[in-house]
Every structure is written in structure tokens, then in C-alpha cells.
Image 1 (cartoon, rainbow, N blue to C red):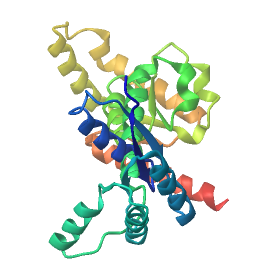
Image 2: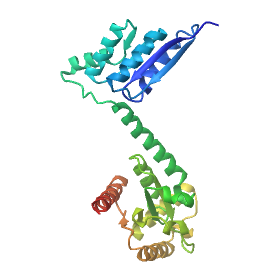
Image 3: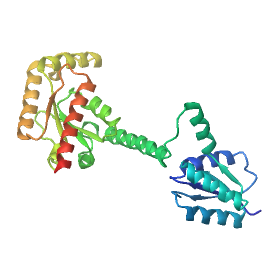
Image 4: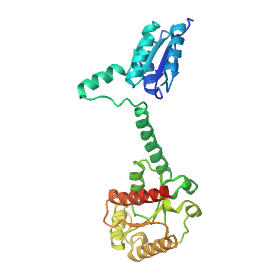
Amino acid sequence: MSEPRLIFVISDATGETAEKVVRAALLQFTSVPVQLRMYTRVRLEAEMRSIVNRAKQMHALVVFTVVSTAHRELLRRLCDEENVDAVDLIGTLMAKLSSYLGTQPKGVPGLLHTIGDEYFRRVEAVEFTVRNDDGREPRNLPKADLVLVGISRTSKTPLSTFLAQKGLKVANVPLVLGIDPPTELFAIDQERVFGLTIKAESLLQIRQARLKHLGMPSDTSYGQRDHITQEIAYAQSVFRQNPSWPVIDITGKAVEETAADILRIKKDRDQQRAAG
């Protein structure tokens, strides 16, 4: 078998974009063995000179994604001087975009990776929130950014999902009449915990509609006014015992409105904590 051909991938960030593009193109050339060597976060002239010199010695092709105009020009010049074949993956596109949009690029390395980090942070938050819905994993409460506490049908799950899509890991814990909340709830940072409440009449309508949708009898205790009143009273007693928990009345509110209230309180607390 013949020796593999070498491709040096140079990037001033993570190099993930360049690597994916090169590997996708190489799928069209499977008959020739190729070895990729990644050189990431390359931002010093000495590093560039060393890599280009190595590429010359090993007869490698250089592929680079460098957003700094000065560094791109330097790499092009070094490759020309050393007679090294090179491909500027991003330069041509940026030049065309600059001309078309009538403005200059920022020239900041790593912006795409920053976007990627944000995306994966949200995905991780949603996965965490799904796993920790309805008090499933109390042992995970210390890992949550926010914990929502309330009786059934106080929008805990839709609120958790909405906040997770903003990148927050959210767990929710149901308050059930006659059952103590998990001890883990009281061991975490109490400023992360938010109580949810609702007016009895509104909850009665919601639960009656829920029972009808499920085909269950309307006289089930879950949908009875007296039982609902007792549940709300129980939740209020838990909230009084934990005065550091903000309690938000969700009656008549859209999920977005309640989420905005929670985020505002969280932001204020974060700022106070940062201020010392």
C-alpha cells in the first residue's frame, strides 16, 4: 500500500469547520490514502513559519481557515515562498461577502465555535430538563440552574421546557398533598428554587378539562374544588416555610410571561451576587 498523502489543516480557532470540509471533499477520493494533521489556534507568525516549513519537508498540502486578514496574507506569502501548495478555505468567501454586503468582516477567530457552544448548551439543557421532569431524579437537583415547585397543573413542565430552550437546566418537583417533598430540594442553593401557585377557580377549570380529555369521571378528587383548595393550601404552607423561594402566581398568564418573571428575578439575584 502506498504512503498516505498529507494534508495540514491550519486554523486560528478549533479547526472543526476546516476538518469537516476537507473530510467531506475527501470522500470523493477514497482510492488514495490521506492523513490529516490538525494545527489549531495558530495565531503567531513563528508557529505559521514552522508549520509551513514542515509541510514543505513532507510535501504536504496546506488547507487553512484564518479569519485575520493579516494572518491570511502571511500564510499565503509563506506558502508561496516555500513553494507549498495551499488552499485558503475562508478567504475567498469572506472577500466575496465583504464586497456583496458592503462591509468589512470582524476578523475575530472562533465566532462559529461560539455559536456551536451555545447550541450544544441548549441541547444539553433540554435533555437535562426532560430527564428531570416531575421530580424523577431528585439526586440531580444540585445540577439544576432552576428548580420549579408546585402542585399538578401549575405549568411546571411547559415552563421548564421553555426555559431549557434558553439554555437553562431546569428540574421541577411536584407538591403532592400528604407527601413530603424530597430532602434534596432543601439541600441545594435555595435561590434557585421558585414556587408556582394558581387561583383555585382557574385550576378547577384546567383539571376538569384534563379529566374530560382523559375520559375520566369529573367527580374524581383530582378535579374537585375541596381537594384543589386543600392542595393549594398545602403548597402555600410549604412556600411559607421556605421564604427565600419567590412564589409566582401563574393564573391567566402565558408560559412566556411567567418565564419572563422568573428570568428577571434570577437576573437580579445574579447581579446582586456578583456585586458581593
